[in-house]
Amino acid sequence: MSELEPIKYETGTAIRDYDIIQITQTENGYEVLLDVNLDSGYSLARTKLDITHEDLQGYETNEIEEGIKYALGFFS
Image (tube, rainbow, N blue to C red; front, side, top):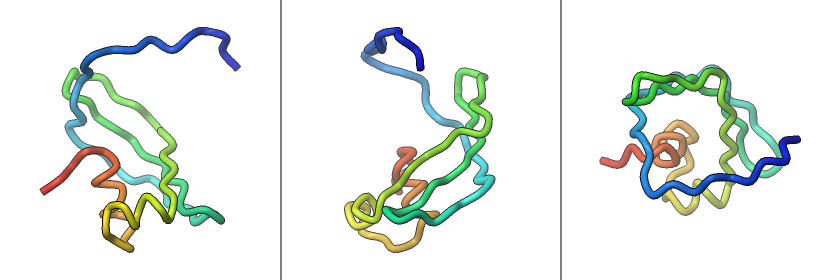
């Protein structure tokens, strides 16, 4: 575990796109493994995203792929 304090930023970079590597159902929802490409040119490889059943209800969907899209800020 890191003992560094988190840094709070006002803004960040946008997500350009992402690839779903694996979706695993858990007791509380889903664990999703992603590769994420950022607009800054950097990428996040094999990033874990946890989405609960309550998160999906909040996004008004039962589809995990839709929940991932909303969790990452891709709204239509």
